[in-house]
Image 1: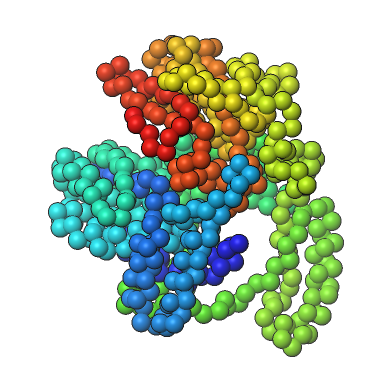
Image 2: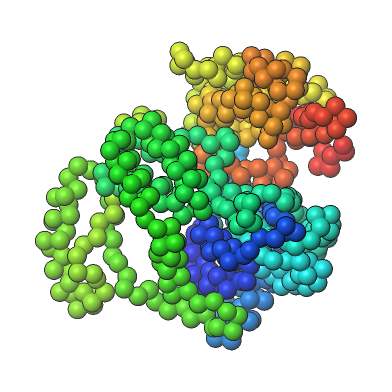
Length: 549
């Protein structure tokens, strides 16, 4: 409903984001910003994360922040300024989403999927920084570096950890409803896809950060894509590691792991070797400068510089179509008749000399037989998701590990009140957008959510329990009380969410509905029992709008 309007608004807001003094564009921007910093023994790393930023911005305060930045630009006409504000108000107050076959209106915050949301959230945080953060003289006295990527903040601070901890804790005391979580370390930190640390000579060292639960998700070499596009994937990933890694030894180490991932995806060993050799022979500083020049082209920084919104120069008209093996013939036909378009007195001057064709992934047998989104028909979305008996059922695959742990039940019982919740969908390990429950042998329950298949997410939990990882409550519990043995781990789906729900990240919007509209069947209450160093998760049926814990 508001998609095109959101794109229009973002065209005018985005240039102001680049002018924020805290703005972090991407990983390369961070590397460039900290490259001249000489580490001192008294320095500390700190990262902060704003909790649920998109959904906590009150409309009035968000519009106030946008008006603040527009008013600082003398080149922006007052009438157009008011029009932009009214457009944003319309977008915020007309964000409808579908939940349980009923449309609901989001009454607080902005939709995560709408085009202008990142710029809107960035400028809102920038307004908070101007009115509060930059006014903190105690923090400013020790601040060496500060950068922010939307709701994720990185700092380098000179001083005591206890003092910095007190300052960061005070961030929660604001009138905007912002809540922060933070981590402080003297040794290292992680920001975006960078792992940052220092060496014995007090130089800042960066490497590419891979999550401990990350899996090999690269496109298979046999995928129906343009061959040139597929062959460029290893080269692009080696370039990424080369730019991120300060030291050659780290680059070579991570390249070995990356090469093995491509081998397992069916890529030609010669292609992988050639890509590595090409990147390893390149100078890292040259790669960084090339990327920086591309991204800084046309970008002007400085608060006193007016933002000029001009048309796109040297635009390229692209013919976008599904890839097929006749792509050479398509290119030839377009270029043979390109002169017809070039002869047009109005269109001709805006076109490039030759046709540019962009191929997207074509439909495969898998996408036809097992589409990720059900086709619309006269039946409701809920009816489509419930093709089969309600409750949890095995997927039928003979080697499915998840099915061995699946609880084939049609209802879930509350651990607190003893009441039951009927499962209203037909769920198996191939179901997506699932709220699920995992139960261990000691009858403790963990409730989670996933946008991927239930089987994929459960196998991650199972693998983490076997590894004994401490970064998640579930795997930590199995390490402490079950000797990392997942045999007693049982799983079941509680609810599935329609894949046709409108707007942005559909699953997150569903969870937003649970809090804003209070229409859920379950409320999840987590109690931290520090004395026993375990986490007990209870679920119970929601019967009142106000809940006493």
